[in-house]
Amino acid sequence: MAQQQEPPAEDVSDRQSKLWLCIALLGLVGLAVTTYLTSNALAHTEVGCSLSGCNTVLGSKWSKILGVPVSAVGMATYATIMLGALHAYQSPIDDLRGRRIVAVIAAIGVLASIYLTSVELFVIKAACQYCITSAVLVVIVAVAVVIAARSEGPLWSAIRRRLD
View 1 (cartoon, rainbow, N blue to C red):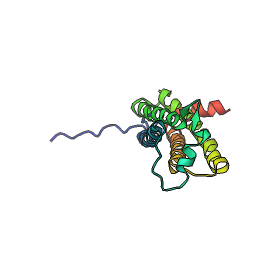
View 2: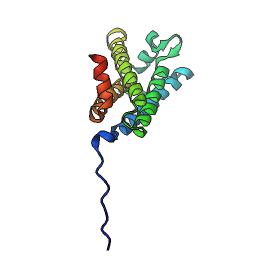
View 3: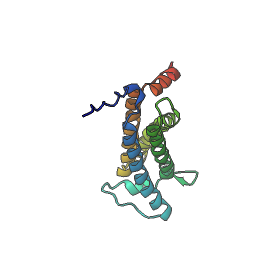
């Protein structure tokens, strides 16, 4: 009987993080939430909501940017996160294109969510469970990107160089 050789141990620094698949899944969930909101906005129908403020928030003047539902911008955001994360997962860790796109979009998404949630709670004085869900999702994506970037190395180094 011939001895079977074990495959060479994979160097952790050469392996992309499986966390990118989770980030892509979060992007898909966010895309589903924002697609639901956008379809209702375009059809001018109310959303089903366990909170009483969803339709108040979604009918406010802050729910559109130049006549386009904010949720449509959310759709583009989450689609980009999903596709960028899938690219990051399938690419070598020194290919930073997808990783950078997801990092930038997630950072912008967090800032936009902070602004929109503040408007929702302090100006409109109503809460929308879908809007809050979207805000939480983009924060989780941002945290996951930082974790993935730190575990892989090259993206984290690029981020740190930008901040220095």
